[in-house]
Image (tube, rainbow, N blue to C red; front, side, top):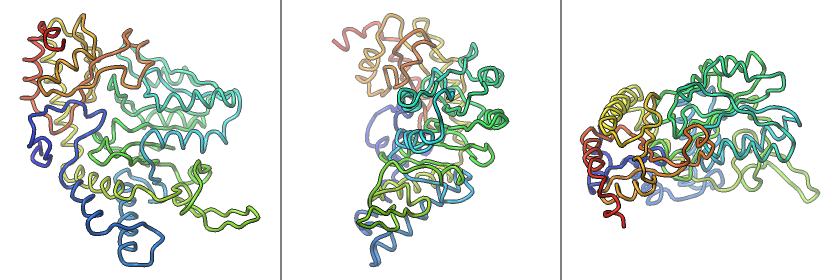
Length: 399
């Protein structure tokens, strides 16, 4: 689907199955970035000349594109960051550091990405909050019953991925937020693995805070989004101070900050990143997320069926729904499998995928991960299967 929009696929014989790490970029995104550098290069919100005013308008229009895409109530609820990691750190250290107290509980799961684990660990060490884990069912999923049973009168935050980056389970965020809000618990959503694959409406889902990266949705690297409800976001203390975010300061130390979202975007921002992200979102909307999701579900089923034909392959998340498959060749280290597949121009991810706690769920530390996109094909999957069928030669190939 739409493979012609990706020069890298047309110019190489690469089979790209590492979309969970980063997606390929359509030509329209690269064209928009080139346009900025070749025609409009300037800073924003500071210049009184045409290019600066033009780019300032384009930048803020990009914010509106993101807000509309997510169903936010106002563009000021969208803050641009460097990525999901930066967004989650801003949420944890800019907001919850100032709202929680020693003994308060934060619920996560053992299948979260490091970006949604380590900041909470650091806050626990710093101020004595308690990090607890929502138990998973036999399919390694979060259930509403397990959530309810884990909540206590000390629970203040539930911070989870919408789709996890290894298991690929899809969480019922709308009902999770409903349960949490019944207990006055705030919900933080890591949407890095979901934003390019399924529709997210932050207002309908009643999400309090959310984070994602542009490069996971066919946009540039180095650009991310922090969404927050306005009444919460206004209490988020900036974690960076500098130009662009202050209204006034003087030598006596008096500082007055600008309104949202400017107060949370100190310094010269990633202008080309915002323009590229907006273009990527328009591109995805033009194709249609429903169409993308249905096609990727079809591809996933085909991949699972084909892998299941090979009795030396162990699939760890066969029954989950997202376009992510974790597997191993029996008796072969995951990185060796990845090196072997690379000799056939097949790109996969191997390792712990920045989700080191998942080893306690799978009972294995490292896996091979295939993460699909709409530009992948059944022919590519067939090629993968044929290569894996010959994997008894793996040691001759990689040594």
